[in-house]
Length: 226
Image (tube, rainbow, N blue to C red):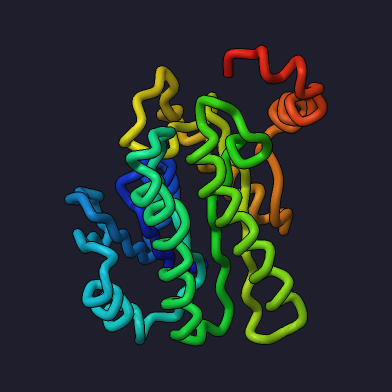
């Protein structure tokens, strides 16, 4: 089935894998937006910022397109106080502004996919600033699900949790982990959306790990170097 699929933050690793997955079906039309230069074969690529003038340009580009799926993969991982403005701008404010932009276009039937992180589940000394910005986006997504639960058009909001051993959410953060070349993460995300499971872990293994992390008593958790 032909779909018009939008990617914001299209240079991120997770977006790259999903673009490759969806572009295998030549009937799909993919529009990829990023602040860095893109080079995806057969994809409508746009190097563009997210300031006010650029948002208007994005809106003009998409105004006559019947949008089926929007992926918001903008991400920046830092735990330095000096980066707090940048972290909230990229991880929280830009996805919110882009969501409003799409909703203003009055899509008839559309799925929005955000990406959460284990960092938002429990504050850790290594990622508490990043986690707080992702937690803000999670609350925004939950609120939209509530607002649109009983309305038409049929708009849905998904927020799967992407784990560090599954993917490297952002190119700004160096990690030993890389996405699989076979596109397994993309397949898990597409399967997750197909089940209409709006929030949760992609694998049972990580659901169990994060459950354990949530219930560790503070006096023990504070001594763990994570």
